[in-house]
Length: 239
Image (cartoon, rainbow, N blue to C red):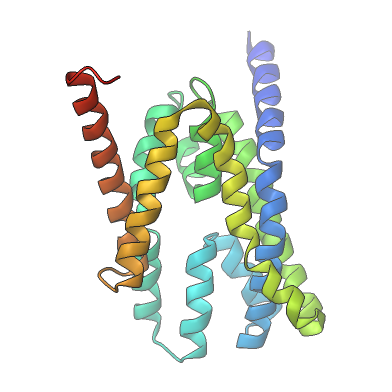
């Protein structure tokens, strides 16, 4: 039985690696750009790699670089990182319902690897997700982010300026690619994505909320709005 369980875990881990390949590829240009910016900010290659190893949060790391360059204190950097990543409370609570039951220390390991992209891949998988599958997804994504952060720092500013600018849109393209399979399966996902995007733009561009809070508020409100609309349509016999 133990051998069967081990073989099954290995298969699930490989499936996770395959599912996370698109994330790893999408992280390459983003991590390269981060490495480039880290070098221009004054971080050593060791500091750059250590930040990616310990933080593993793209948006927070980019914001941290700008704050470091401005000479902002460590307390404000930590607080901003918390605000930007506060949405992880919601994602982790949602993912906990999706995952199989397992030991707490194993949950702690894959909780560290939780990002917007890994959450999307795991959460949209059919049925329950195994710990091995989640670890596979996060392992390849984490490895790509750390390795190419170092590569970006190593090559420095040798890339042409137009290529560095083009890298900034890669993350958005990756999100679209991850979202498309779910959009094909359910029109509800389309409404959720559309309403959340509109609300986030409203909160961000009007200055009503900071980036982290804007994402949280947009996620919560879009979920409530879409669920209320679906409930109303069901009651009046429109669905």
